[in-house]
Length: 293
Ligand code: COA
Image (cartoon, rainbow, N blue to C red; front, side):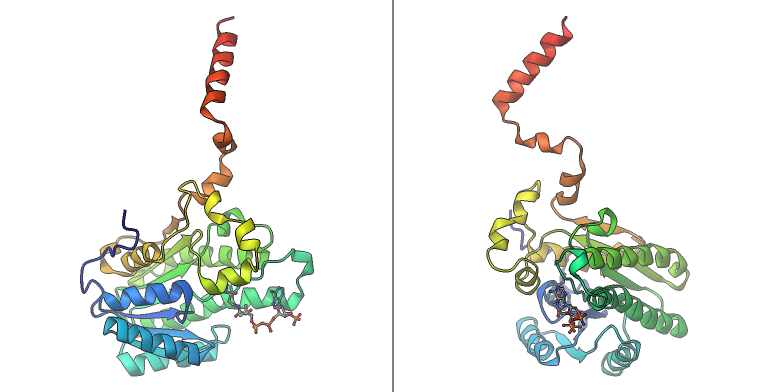
């Protein structure tokens, strides 16, 4: 199986202008690259202009596409507004907002300062809100239809998760925002969807979240029923579909792409996976013999 195979046909995103927050590295960069390969014009944003410019140049060379690097801290509404103005000045319009920028501290919650918690809420929830509100207002004001917002959440947005509580809290808010606006803004021709990725290793986030030999101790692939982590192209394929016109009737959906990871933890009897075949033979014999009495 070729997990890196590209799903959509050539030019599937021609004429689309897409903004990817946090597009300078990791999964944001992988999605940006595929959007460009499919003919979209993309703007990537983050706080680190140098990194953005390096990425934009690299992707333009690799894809022959267009990538604009724009500095923007999504925590500040005025910066989001000027980022939007810059996108419009460069490309004349914008069709898609991909809220991908995120931050996360792995920590026992009681060790976090109030400011640390605020930092994550501000980047993930307030940042997604700031971009969504600015872009939504613009589209509604200009009466531009056939636009969409794609939010990157996580499966613990609905299960919750220990040790990443600010992130879980914020992502749950983003998921609620996704479903709420899918209904409220549909009348303006704005679709709103989300993706909940499972483990897709990226250098930056994984080195920060699981430093040193923690990565080897907590091999996340083992927690996945498919026994592997995701390939970045698999996520890029799903994102490209959801921002494209092929998904024009998909609205308010959150699509999980995690190899079954979160359900593995949820099913009451899933731990029986550890039972070998011979033991099942014995158990079956014991259960049947009881049933016959
Ligand atoms: N664990 C707990 N608290 C931490 C922390 C950590 N690893 N790192 C920073 N903090 C605390 C700081 O002490 C500070 O709180 P204080 O003022 O009470 O001391 C607060 O968090 C803000 O820290 P600061 O470094 O000023 O934040 P920042 O706004 O400059 O950057 C991030 C925060 C999240 C943007 C930055 O750490 C980052 O770029 N992270 C990489 C992106 C990322 O996390 N990706 C994962 C995506 S899932």
